[in-house]
Amino acid sequence: MNVQVQVLGKLPAGQRELVVLAGKTGKKTVVSSFLPGDLRAKVLSILKEQPELTEFGKECFFHADGRPIIKLLLVGTGAIEECTADKSRTLGGNIARASAAGKQRSPVVCFPDGLAGDCVRIGAFAEGVILGGYVFDRFKTEKKPVSLEKVLLVAPGAAGAETAVTEAGCIGENVNLARDLINSPANVIAPESLAREAEKMAAGAGVAFKILEQKDMEKLGMGALLSVAKGSAQPPKLLVLEYAGKGGGGEKIAFVGKGITFDSGGISIKPAEGMGDMKGDMGGAAAVLAAVCAIARLKIPINVVGVIPCVENMPSGTASRPGDIVTAASGKTIEIITTDAEGRLILADAVWYAGAKLSAAKIIDIATLTGAASIALGDFVAGVVANNQDLCDKVIAAGKVCGEKCWQMPSFDEFKEYNKSDVADIKNSGGRSGGMITGGMFIGEFTDKPWVHIDIGNTDMAKKTAGYTVKGASGFGVRLLIQTARQLLSC
Image (tube, rainbow, N blue to C red; front, side):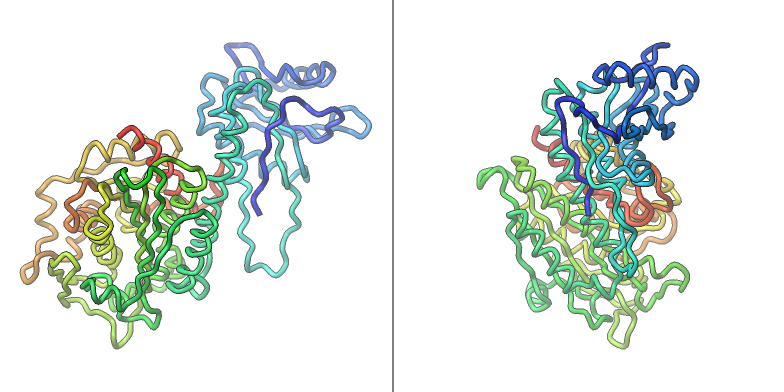
């Protein structure tokens, strides 16, 4: 269940569950002018005794006089002018969990003067509440009782605040849907069941939807994608979502998401330790599905197609082998060096399909492609490879706005040498050196359209709960793709 967030024009009389944000403007302590005089005096008195509570992220529960007693959560914003949208989002996530732990059911949040009138930061805060309040307990037989149900934001005079919070609700809910899919085990989310979930989500968002079955992919000559599915009893699916927000005359933007519902590595089998986490190798697919549905719900005036190749990578007597050569739909031949570099194979045919068959003018693929991403960029920055600088700049700019950071990797022609094969047109692994770059550049060989690859192999799973991130599936990429769609409106 998602935490509901609403905007109020004033503080309700008799409210007994409060969250008061306090910050600094210069040396002056700032809280909301809309607090009742006696309560405001009480809060300022506390802050005078404990000035550290105005520091960013500091929080403490108090009980204020009243009948019944007011349960008050005091939270620091730090310097008001330095409280960015992403910091506001972080505060929202922290407060959602603190309020739930303090058994607040419907707290009212009072923003400090200087922040209360900023609908961008208020929207980001609301988004943080929904993301930070996420709980995945689908498979728990004993579920913890839900304490936090609703958060009410006092934002008098903030033009556009209600719209910002409504949009934040849509975005947050779709990120959480993606998290649910990624967190679910592979015996629950397989190609067939993912297709069914996608169909329901598309119908709910008013998005056109179709499934290409194995026979359809065989007719199209998708030998790269089909080679990955050969070892599994699960038949592959290619999901296509289409939202025409700009109408028939506008160009199409394609989002392509890697949907390996479980990755054993195939014949090049992975080590047993940590293999269970490979249920999340469809993080790119979940991001594309959730983003396209959110874009439709938000009615962003852009034409978007989502292309999601869904397969399971398993070892068996019918599986592809290292050394096999397959032919992609584009006609290129591929030498399979390792069956554990399978994501780029399914994306090769998917990006080709987006450009050649769906007439997408620009293509952005997103994938849990490499472990090399973590080596290069740590756990919170996605790596980007592109053949078009303008499109790449828009993706990176979108990341700065929404808080999902991206960093462009070099893609010099010399890197292409790593992917050259002695016996085919290209091979599916260039080795460890520059692995994130060569993996991305492999995909780029299968489209001549402006294209960007986003590697989320390091950002898809959160190791701990902090801010608006909850341990487990992060849903990274949903907000990035939505914001990219907005950035592309200027094209």
